[in-house]
Image 1: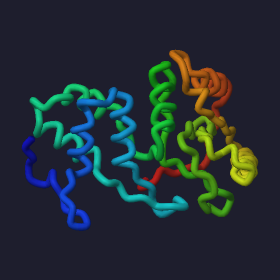
Image 2 (image 1 turned 90 degrees about the horizontal axis):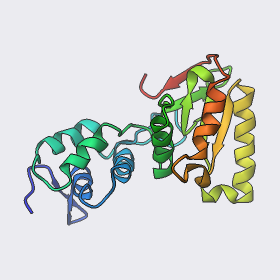
Image 3 (image 1 turned 30 degrees about the horizontal axis):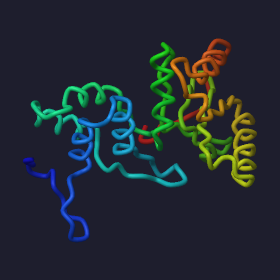
Image 4 (image 1 turned 60 degrees about the vertical axis):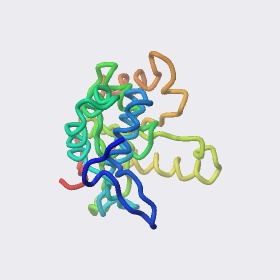
Length: 205
């Protein structure tokens, strides 16, 4: 196996492949959707108006470049398909799968890195994905959301979201299962009856 310049890094004295090269290597063993989720996790970035700002391990342009440098590599065709679907802002694989399910069902692609602000302009809610023009916030509730303390925080978040004039769609793992994920019906029902706008901001805009 050969590596080009910049594809091998040193970390704590250990030689590692770069995030972009690691992602490309995974193309030979992951499905397209899994590769999109892996790519999302590499390029995810949040600005200073998020509770925990994040810097990306790599950029989409870095992934594009490394694919272009390995035209004959195993899995590169799959990587090209995944590249078209990678977006900045998803914190977990389920969030990626939620977005892909909505888009493949013919619904508009939700925005990521959306910040809801209160009347003073302070950031107060950070949806996992959103339809700002419709005031719809999507929140994926993973297994840890069954914890009583987390549940109370989720309810508080939902009330705050609604106080800002938004509607919150809470999505569980079961809503992403099957050929026709129920999250699609949840979102379609709201998109069909909502047409307002609210102050919002994307990170970096």
